[in-house]
Length: 134
Image 1 (cartoon, rainbow, N blue to C red):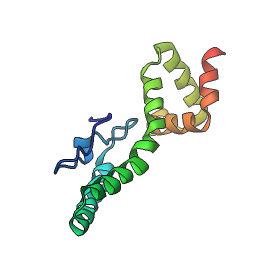
Image 2 (image 1 turned 135 degrees about the vertical axis):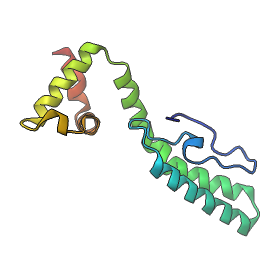
Image 3 (image 1 turned 180 degrees about the vertical axis):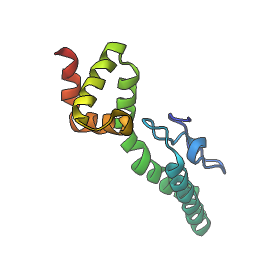
Image 4 (image 1 turned 60 degrees about the vertical axis):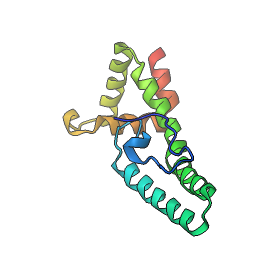
């Protein structure tokens, strides 16, 4: 899954969108929505360029849209992903115990664990971190 930072516009005649621009969600790997949106914004940027004849319109429109709507919101997701990937086996076991408690009586296999983990960390980051020192 192409996730990371890549120069999406270098001033030439090429705009990178979707997977080519590494715009997949850093936590889930999902990328089709970002590909569709970035493709639309690239088309709109080209339209603005054709109207004005200024390359700066491409930069201003496309880069600003991608930064505001994808890259800035993903900063927190990168932090969560990096934190999660660096957990030890024991720490992961503790998180699973917390998840089981959060789920209560529902069957564990029927739950989208990544979604629960994502929401748990976003809503209670201090609680998740403190649970490792109890």
